[in-house]
Amino acid sequence: MKSNPDLPDAPKPAALLRRDFESSTETGESSSAEDPQQQDKQQPSQQQPKPGDQTAPPSPEAPSLADLGLTAQQTNGDDKQQALLDKRTQMLKIHQRLGLITVIPVAAACISSVGAPPEHGNYGNTTSRDVHVALGGVAIGMYAATAIYAIRAPRVSNEPARGGIKLHKYLIYLHAPGMVLTPILGAMAFNQINSGQKVHGIASAHGAVAVVTAASYGAAIIAVSWPIHLKF
Image (cartoon, rainbow, N blue to C red):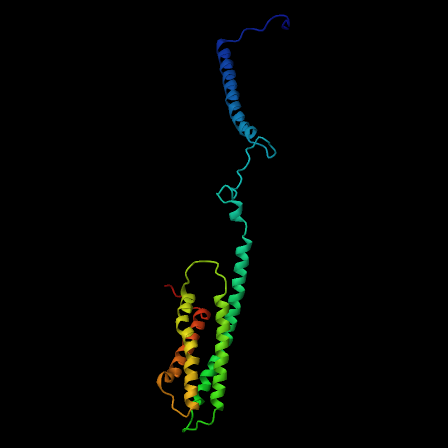
């Protein structure tokens, strides 16, 4: 027997209707529960700015010298001060070179002093004394030229000297007066010998003053040449 297509289907039992309703409800909840997660995953990617986005805040700039309170006059170099510094440097270089050269006649004058006194009362032989006087004169002249470059070098700072430079300046109070007294005492001793007299009086201190002068002068050179690290 064939069924009539115009007739409606037979109603489903209540148990089947309830099962279909529960399955459709669970399917809808699972799909709706997954949608927020997918939206949350997509939302950060939409909020991230693009590299070419013009709305990104600009990076902070580094502070300028004006922001630090320095004026243009303070930051620009002082040509006058630089010229003084260059002049001082050049003059002190010449002072150093002349000081080293002066060691030669000073040492030669000290060595030649061995033959300056007359031997066995022979006051007539003046050759060794003349050589000693000539070397002493060269040493005094070189010393004076060396001192002039140090004295006339312009000062660029009022900071006190330290270490070897300070010792170098202290030794000036020994060898500078010695360079003045040594030729004076030497001239007195020279005149006494030429007069046929033995060296006597203050002229007899000529040799001792010369030794102290030469020793202090050499120590002054070592103080600025040797790597001496003194703190006082």
